[in-house]
Length: 116
Image (tube, rainbow, N blue to C red; front, side, top):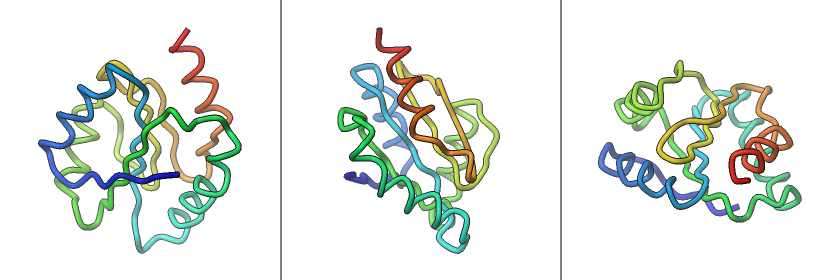
């Protein structure tokens, strides 16, 4: 799994455009939350086995970049949660999950369904 940092509003605009070419995941992470650390660790351990290598992954440290996190929630029309996984396709959030409800099997189904 290769995380790309998300730390600016301008970058969010680019990610939305990039999502028109292929699926993007944004993972919003609180560096002080044990549940968030568990969810991130589980993502990293399971990612390679799920056949999601074509999905580009962005990591947002929401404590360091709170304004960007708020903008992500507003632009993608999702309630802010942490940890939170957002699937962005064609400039829109097509799937989101939070806390220990983050499930890569569900993510994979949503990527497969929307890419057919």
